[in-house]
Length: 224
Image 1 (tube, rainbow, N blue to C red):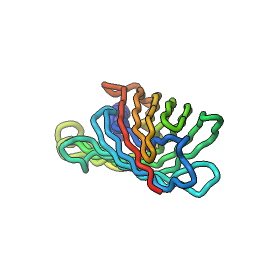
Image 2 (cartoon, rainbow, N blue to C red):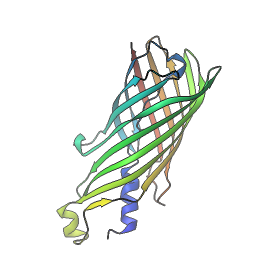
Image 3 (tube, helix red, strand yellow):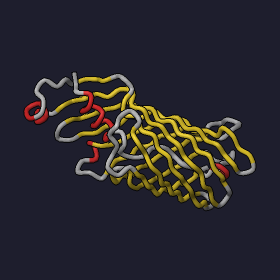
Image 4 (cartoon, rainbow, N blue to C red):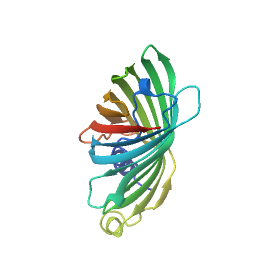
């Protein structure tokens, strides 16, 4: 059986790599809005960049199917990335105040000289803030839970650290990450410029990352 302390450390690092999900100015979402293309970059444990796409659903309340891919600036981008697919929608609005809920399924991959991880996870996020036609500011609270992670250890790990280590899937909930932050943006006719800043912490392990802060800059383009 894999050492539990080792498991918590490596999953805490693994699941904190970079942000996912889309951010919009919800006050500017209209019936004519159909597609939103986005890009973002910044720092969340490491430098990253991402692209995303959202499709507006034909519901009375604003809601989107959304997907995205984020990669880190490492030697091999195929070793470290995060893919998400999910839904985001407006739960409440009144005179420019909007409450938003998003739910995303995640596929995370991380590889090093010691281990390759493939993880299935769930991300839930709430946004609450003031949205105007030209600008917006909101708080964000998010929770990411790893549901199951597949470990494949390298020969280096088996030779120098632990020869009897077991590869395979580890199913219990693990690598819980909670984040608290603020996001804001300035909106043009068909686009938004977005900034996010905040703090994250592991909740299923006593081990947190070295720099537990994130900051991202993003851009959205609305296409009819």
